Picture 1 (spheres, rainbow, N blue to C red):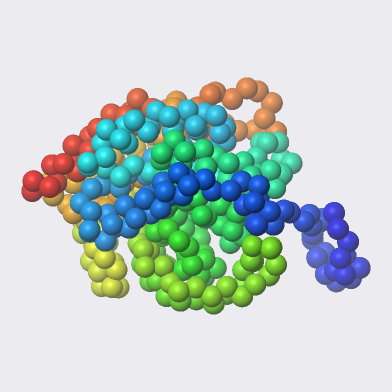
Picture 2 (cartoon, rainbow, N blue to C red; picture 1 turned 45 degrees about the vertical axis):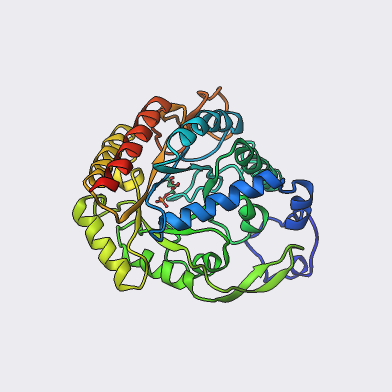
Length: 360
Ligand SMILES: O=C[C@H](O)[C@H](O)COP(=O)(O)O
Ligand SMILES: C=C(OP(=O)(O)O)C(=O)O
């Protein structure tokens, strides 16, 4: 821990136990550079997602993967299984792997692999940033674009260049910091509706992100910097349900499309089948995906994408930090996930729905 002028003051940081300097974003990027194949996968992913969400590509975006990555080997195993299906359904689906390292908590809990990569409360964030970056390179090397939630305004400097789709989550969608951040990001960004179910905050977030912004950030050297952005043309909204209930029904989708259109956004939404749309019940999530597939097959063009929380083993297991007992391989330690078998079936159903939509 370093000693600073602030440490010598008795009125500053009275509730701070310490600061620890980290490697700068440029240090980490130099240690783990982007290979040309990875750059091509990230770029293609971004372009295809943007094309789907602007109506230029009539396929369906499917974002699928674990609620959180806690064991990179199991998540790589998932990616190896997902890749052949992504290829098989490439005429109908743009498949992107959920690779979530930052978990927003309702109150407290494990905050993800970047914050606590050893799952022991040591909060080795420097290691977490490198593990996340290495993992994203590995997934892109397999040939899959990745999706993540960006929760902290500083982490993007370390990992964002490897990501093809980003979410601003339900708990931060109304935050000016996150809207400003999204305005400078290089990939399409989805704003979730609020935890109370309010869709307008997501629409407002997407509009704010399309505009140029000036705000406080850090540069590649880790120094405080004035960041000026040009605005992100590929911001959109994600329906995830809320305390007021689910919002994936035909009526909810029609209302949301009207709402985004009124604000000047393209008439497309992504639907998250998990979270408050499924009550975090993975069995219910499968029913929600099936219902959404039905809407798509019936010709609903406003559904640009579907998100599924999915891992190798269905459900979720409790996580005690530090971990004292072996964890079930390939099972979520945060929200309940669809099993691999259920996911494979649903990917086929969504591909069939996307095909059917072209004929309506
Ligand atoms: O997706 C994950 C969770 O829904 C979110 O992080 C909140 O989790 P919590 O309510 O268990 O804290
Ligand atoms: C936390 C998540 O979602 P939401 O912001 O919708 O709760 C998530 O997708 O992991």
